[in-house]
Amino acid sequence: MIELYEATFQAEWLRWAVSLTGEMLSLFGTGNGALRFAPAGHEETLPVFRDAYDGAVPAGNSVAALNLLRLGRMTGRSEWEERGEAIIGSFGESVGLSPASFTMMLCAVDFCLGPTGEVVLAGATGSKQVERMAAVVREHYHPDWLVLFHPTGVERKEIESVAPFVAEMNAPEGQAAAYLCRNRSCQAPVNSVNALKELLEGARPAAVIEQ
Image 1 (cartoon, helix red, strand yellow):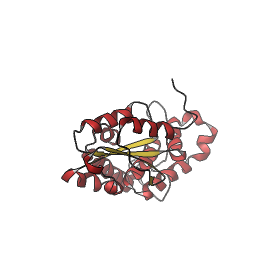
Image 2 (tube, rainbow, N blue to C red; image 1 turned 180 degrees about the vertical axis):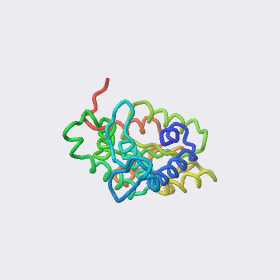
Image 3 (cartoon, rainbow, N blue to C red; image 1 turned 90 degrees about the vertical axis):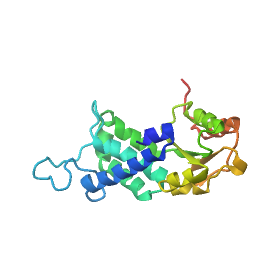
């Protein structure tokens, strides 16, 4: 759902992700650590254990940790970020002993440690300038960057209800704009594709090697 939102900018996918995450925590969350396999009320019929081994299919806790971190950042729910960090911490010793067995969990660790950030695009839905800016963001694989779209008009309320922090990020004078945010602080917006490219290049870690 998160990736579908980033690909389409349709807020319904993000709302669905938020809803499913709340249900996941209600059914499988106990305490502040890892999620368990058996949902609440089914402990007598299903095995109760907590696992993060990433085989051919990533473990539920590994995926949950990354999703909680990403959704927490996208929606401003710091408690979800903290829960994602707590899941990682629950398996810290095991991951340290055999990192190759926890590849998806390591993706969550990478996102947790950063550097990460959010790119918020603001403008009219269907705007060619917004589409060009979105294409720039998607040009390279940036797993630790999140992308949101804040449309103009009545549509804006839909995403603001899920990600309230975008409410102040508007398209000045009707021009499409891009905001780069890190550590809950956003830089001044840029209004051109070239300026956005420069902004993203400057934000990329020095260790990134072009293929």
